[in-house]
Length: 398
Image (tube, rainbow, N blue to C red; front, side, top):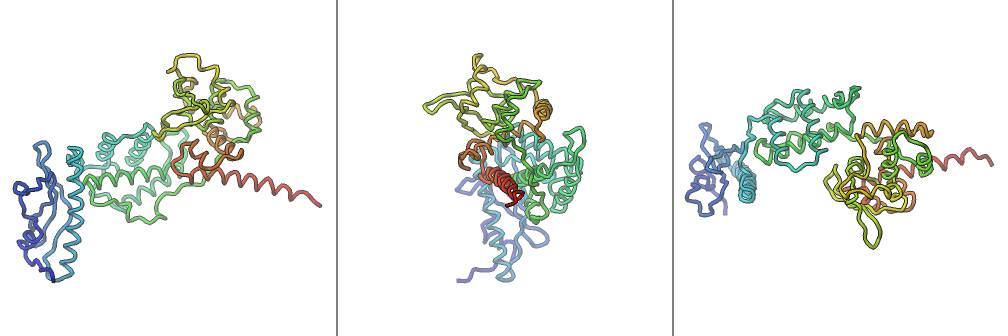
């Protein structure tokens, strides 16, 4: 049976049940899809709710047209499907959280206001909060931070991406260009903010959705310096001006822990079971747990440091910057011509384990990677190193 066409505003409201009063609705929803007639002849849709005694109205930026033919009918049905889906989602959020419809971020809000609201409610690690702080600083320099959300379109995001491609790193004193990996991280964080704004009803759509992949920042294939087992031995036998940094770095070479996790490590984090000693910590960068079993070699760097209070730090490190300065000087004195930072120890742990026969899955868990493709980078490094070594045979003349 052919569905009737609603050719007047009254018919649209009545036919699609948009004129039902919340007071007479038996379902007693917390968020309703409402509509009002416009002088243009169209019907404007919006969301209505009462939270804490305060009436909230949020535009859906969706409209119904007078149904003069079947195509208009089909378009209206699709529009209502989208609007009702979002209304149901908002209603669920309010029901579960009690404040999901309490939008302080509205269409006139700026990107800065959105970011502040997101940081207030999101459960983020310190490193993630620092990342969003960097996004805000560069958004201010690019003129994006004070733009109203309703004015931020795809072209505005494209301009921000172009700005990032020539921007300087504001966190370093030497004003180096912003690393391409950092550019991608900032863009990804901005994408998260826009998705949040859409969920909150502050934006109709994410402006990055219309961007081509080629327009978005891409990761640079970075050269991951790592130390060979022989180079680790050389460092072990070379005096270092800071024995604390030396011990922590060598320990990290055999555990794969990041600087942030090594610095906060306490005796209470060292546990034992039938399989031996292991570290069980929550990684500071990702806020995810990691469990790392300790070899006797790894234990040799901390055995003399476990006699104090259980909550005392095993290593007394100041900052990553100071540690990296010390490591570079130490590596140079050992005759190692590589740019050595504390993070080099993590790369070293990964390649060492793969070289010794550990599976990719094992190394993935050791490093706490969420995606095995990240771990595969180390396997590729070893392949390249082995291929280069075999080519040395070309110098042999038979």
